[in-house]
Amino acid sequence: MSAGPKAPSPPHTGHRARLRERLAREPLAVADYEVLELLLGYALRRTDTKPLARELLRRFETIRGVVDARPDELTQVPGFGPGLLAFWQVLREVLARRASAPLRRRKELATPEAVARMARERLCASPHEECWVALVDGANRLLAWERLSRGGVSAVPLQPRDVLESALMRKASGIILVHNHPGGDAWPSQPDLALTAELQRLAPRLGLRFVDHVIVTEGDCYSITQCKVL
Image 1 (spheres, rainbow, N blue to C red):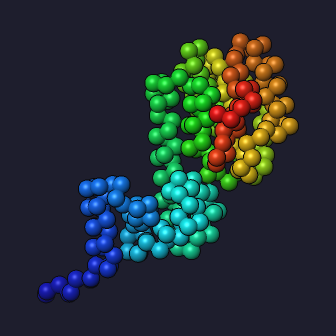
Image 2: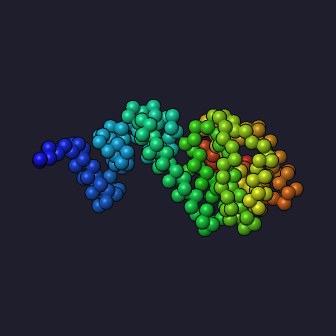
């Protein structure tokens, strides 16, 4: 028995092939919305993704803005459903791990500035507050990068002992504490300052260095101990 007629390819298939050829030949000749269109096409294979790509750029202005957008913001865009959100979360995780690679492989010193860059990739799109800690050895090489606590949109529960116990368990020399402010204001709150002061007081008693407490937002990273934007 002969096979039935082959289903026709979606009309945008040839368009995507031409975009991929242009990207391979001359990447900078491909517009931002076209790059997004190609990326979206890997998750929405049978859908024309050009309208969605244009709408995402209209709302979030740049590719960086689209990639850094929070899940609740993305799902407000018509056509951005649960399947695409799952794909986006994998993309975000790839970028976060790429940013942490130099520190994890101990090819870069874990300065507050370097940790802030690493933290921003992981936390800038989070809709809730999270507290992470970078634990370093005596030469400021990264020993561990781990989440200590996860909270709501404006607060995260954390006690000084949680931070200190983690450092002692890992046999670390120094501590760089990091948390995000989903609201976008990097200025430290009174509880942020109180926690920092308590850790600065307690850490030396246990033979530890409290290096910094960094606050991360979508646009800024602020060092509490240095009192400046990183």
